[in-house]
Image: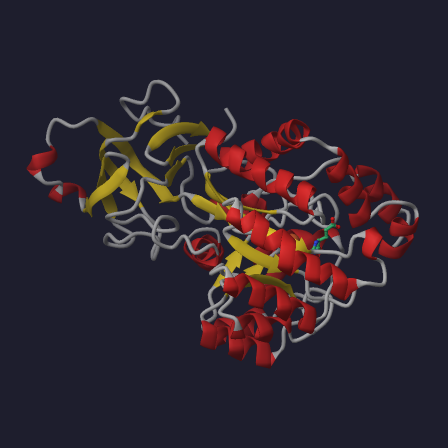
Length: 420
Ligand code: DI6
Ligand code: FE
């Protein structure tokens, strides 16, 4: 393939993307222009103000800077709609333990597991958490991610949850990327509440969530509904507290067993239900009725050597939108590549390339409530898109361990991405 075209007048990273973007191709369904055709759009003040065919660019835009895509493929900026990117410590040693045959309970008894990350996160100050999380975010951004969700849930006490969320906000500001902060106080039972899960849920609902929401640190509320975490009744209390504050909800549901979590979340209008390996017909019907997005997390499935994939065919038949995300976390999904998740969603879960592409753009945006600003190249939206050095869109899901070169436009600024 010829070298990446010099998208004149790109000179310095972070320069304005205002101008006429010409001769680009957008995969079907990811733009509001004619699908599969060479197309063009105009960016003004960081927003897309016109889209159409190259020959139709209005003369009113003559003289603007021109960016020639030379027939390259472009997609909306990618959206990673499920991550636990901010945490302290490392769990790398658990990898060897797992390979040697240790299971989750043995690892926990040996001082590992989620509680180890909680201890390390509580012990870390904001700058330490920031310094650890920044390279993880950088890795995602280098692949063309323009919006990312970051959950709390490794503090499990007010001050530490606050630090996680403040770091998430700071990352968004410093890196110029849209970060949605999700409060996941009901992720696990902190050790000091052993045997008193309901009392901990009281603390989550009556103190932590209202305080953090009042500080502007919460965009959505999540919980982990599982035998090893919280019951549907406890999760429902968290959802009621979220509704009181006008916050949307989502749920780690049906990852290890069918708890009816997806149906519960759907009844509360959930933006998304995530994991879903054990999702049944009732859950699918409820999600369809509520318009909840199914977020598929093949990284956790792979790393845990799970053997039961989520019911993709049933979700497809029901018309439930499917998103794909990294679930980056130190325990079950140490994943720093959304493109690799596209590959795994296709290979392990049976998504088509088009589904995987929609899963990291349109549907992922919707899973975060960002469907008006992300996930589609269209008039009226901020300029968040990626020009790829690929011959066809399937390459985004095809390569394993190779990042196609790309040029990213994030929030109306041209930034470099991909490997050199
Ligand atoms: N589901 C998971 O698999 C992770 N959290 C969750 O809700 C596990 C997180 C960890 O092990 O640190
Ligand atoms: Fe998760």
